[in-house]
Image (cartoon, rainbow, N blue to C red; front, top):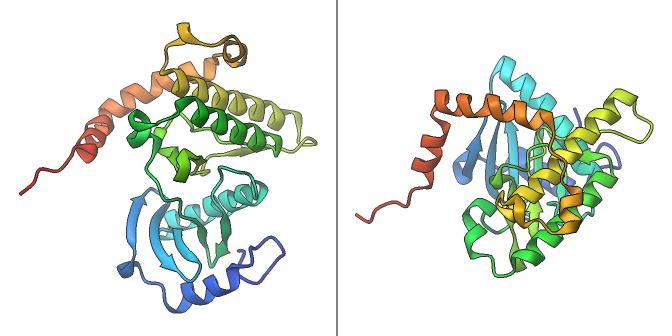
Length: 245
């Protein structure tokens, strides 16, 4: 496990954050952003400003899986350091992943209020292309909650839990998977930009779009699964404005 103060890959904020995380931080003083099968995400005010803390679950099996997933996600953030549109990575400290908090809503919530949609998607494409150049493909950009609308309508890509990494000298099979996941990212960008109106694609975007059989299979599985788990109903209920008392 990577801890604060070990390795040159850690950001200079890691030492003060490690002291704060070990001796001062409590979940009671933080806001729970989400809880998955492997980790919880908290928003907390730290010595370096607001940070998101992804903490593995306190469970023998799920906790172990969560720590493995966070180590992988930390490696992804290290690769993406310095790319505009990627939150700053503060380090993997005592099993917890710490990243910069981006002040802004998700694309899901802000989509209809964007003032300059073309600029937003041009910036997002620049981020994706820079990300792919480092050998990282996100794999889940179809989820609008994985894109944030930051200050100045700068798009930010978050949640690299299932990202796929492949170096130029990686085994052929790994590069092949990377190319599929990279294309999924591009296809998701096009679907979001054009709201699935494929007849409206500009020529340069039509050249980028290549539907994958993998996406059709995933969709065939996802829709029945959402019905079984009532996921869509829960999302609508969660996003419904609360009534004034």
